[in-house]
Length: 118
Length: 174
Image (cartoon, rainbow over all chains, first blue to last red; front, side):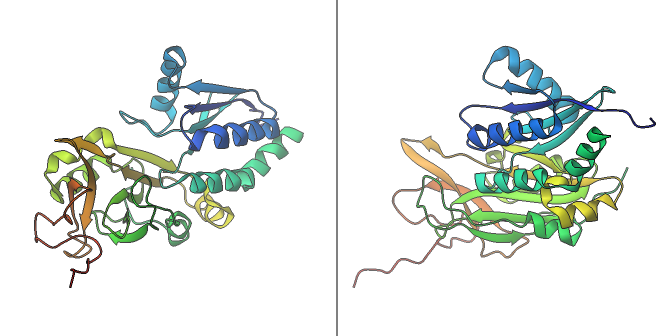
């Protein structure tokens, strides 16, 4: 099979106090992970150990800034690659909710799921 | 490397700001004012009728976030420029699947680049016991909006460049 890479893990960088993160992205992330059949990893930026891992993945694959935006969502693949999927919309929580809805209804997700079914 | 350019129209439509209310100030509906911020992209400032800024946003198409350029542009428009701190500028990349199907399909046909958004949000701060917020004076036109900080209590704030009162005109007592 020429393209056999599969998603392996969904990572959510978040904080419990952030209304774009909890409960919105927490719930939507779990739903996305279920659809992709992968485990979810929550990295809480207020936990020092998790914060280091969060900073690393944001710096390498996401939207890094001295005080970066949360939530940020990443999909890890079996070939070691990582895709940045979404960063919260600073405008308002409702806009981040719309982005999650669009992501869950996207052609991209449909195509990845088709690949999983093969 | 792709030089920065304006957003595809369909992506710009998808990223157009939606309504909101002025958080922890007056709860009035926010208004969106288009701004020119020195690049090929689109700038917006979200402010309440009193001129209190909720967030300023700039977005363009490119390989990297235009944070450094926006920082310089905002400092030029802000009194004093030191109000614009690098740590208050935050970037976000918008790829396509999170922008709705029409934008996703359009972007799938455009290899390279992404929509690069930078937000500037200055949180309220206290100075000499008074809460200060960021205001915007829009009387200078879209190219030259002026940002400044002022107390939210007391007199109507005045733009440090043109002296105009910012926000809705208040009726004087008869």
